[in-house]
Image (cartoon, rainbow, N blue to C red):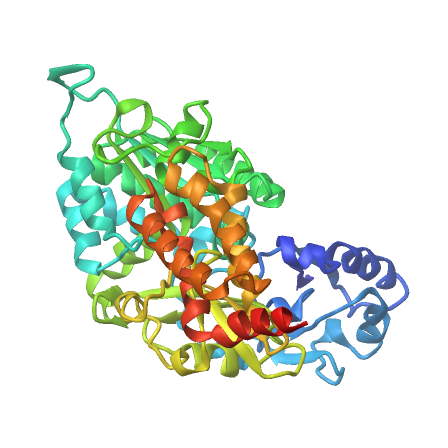
Length: 533
C-alpha cells in the first residue's frame, strides 16, 4: 500500500521551491515512521493554478485530497510531525480538502478540469479522467459534422482575436485547391498549427495547460485534423518554456506508443502526425503569419493578408492556426456536446475563459469562469486585492497591447463585445493589477517602447511610429510643448491603428489612449509640475 503525495512539476511551483521540498520530504520521512505497511509515492502533477499557494502539497486520503501550502523546506519536518501523511489537518498550512478551497471551488473548470489532478505524462491517468472521449466520438463523425459541432458550440479563438473557431475550420475544410501548385489539383497537404508562443505579459494559461494536461492539447489537434482533412500538426512552443517542452515531448511520444498519433489512429485508418517546434524568441512570432514564416525557417516577419492562412498558410497550403486553449477545449465540446458548452457565457462569448491574475495581486493564479463576471469580482473575490495592501489604481487586460482600465470600468462584463464597447480588449485573459503608486505616464511610454523593441519592422507605421511615440511621450512628460505634443500623439495613434500591417502596431495605441483618457492627471500635471521647476 502506498501514500500518494502530489507535488507539482509546473514551472511556477518549481520556481517557488517544489523540487527542494521533495528532497526534504524524502529525507525527513526516513526520520518519521510511516503508517504500517505503507510506502511514500510522490506524484509530480501539474499545478491547480493557485500560484499564491505554491508549492502546494496534496495528500490522498479516503475523504479526498488534503492540501497544504505554501510549503517551504523548513515546513516539512513540522508537517510530518503533525501527521500530514496520515491526513491530519491540525497544521497551520493545512487548507483542508483541495476541492473545497474557495478559490478553486468557485470556478467553472471545463478546459482545466484535469489540471493539477492527473499526472501529465501518464496516459492511463488521462484516460481514467475522461481523456480521449472527444476523439472517440470524433472518429464516428464526418469532417463537416465535426466542424458544425465546433461552430454550434460558439467557441472563439482564445489567443486574443476571438475569431470563431468553427468558421476558420470551415474555410480550411472547403479549401480544395492551391493555385500556386496547380489549379486543377487538390492540395497535397493541410496543416494544424498550435500557437503556443504565449508572450503577453500576465499570461500563463497556455503554459499551465501544457504542463498540467498536455494530452488534451494533443487530442484537440487530432480532432482538428480529422475535421479539416489535415494529417500533419505542429506545436510552436515559446522558447522560454523548457518545462513545457520536456512534458510535451514525453506526451507526444506516449501518444504515438499508444496509437493515438500516427498512420492508423486507434485502428480507424485515420492519420495524424505531430511535431514540436521551438519558437524564435520573438514576441511578434505570436502573430499567426509571422509564426508561419518562422516555422518555414525564415525571419518572423508579418505577412500581408489576404490571403488568409486558412487559404494559403504553411508552405502555401491551407492551414488552421489556433491557440493552445482553443484546441484543448475542443475535446470537451466533442465529449459533452456543443449545447453543453454553449450554455456557459453570454451573448456571442460562449463557454469559459481562463483568466490569469498577475501583477500587484495578493492571490495570483488561474481562474476559469464563464464569460460575464466582472473585473472587480476577479481581483477582489479571487485575487484578494493588491499584494501591497494599497488601493488598486489601474488594471490592464489583454496583454501589453491592452487598455489600462480605471475603477469606473471594473464592472464591465468580461465579454469580447462589452470590452470592445469601452475601447479595450479581453485578449488571452491576462489581467495585470497596479496599485496607486504606479506612474501611468510611464506605463503609456512603456507601451510604445515595447513596440519599438518587438516590432518585426516590416511596416512603417509600426516601425517608425512606435519610436516617434516614445519621443513624443517623453516631451509631454518633460513639459516640452505638452499640449501640441499631445495632439501629435493622437495623430500618431490614428496612423498606427489605421496603417499598421498587424495588431502589433495597430493595438499599441490602446494602452496609450487609455492613459490619455482615464489617467490624464498622471500625464499632463506631471509635465506642468516639471515645467514649473
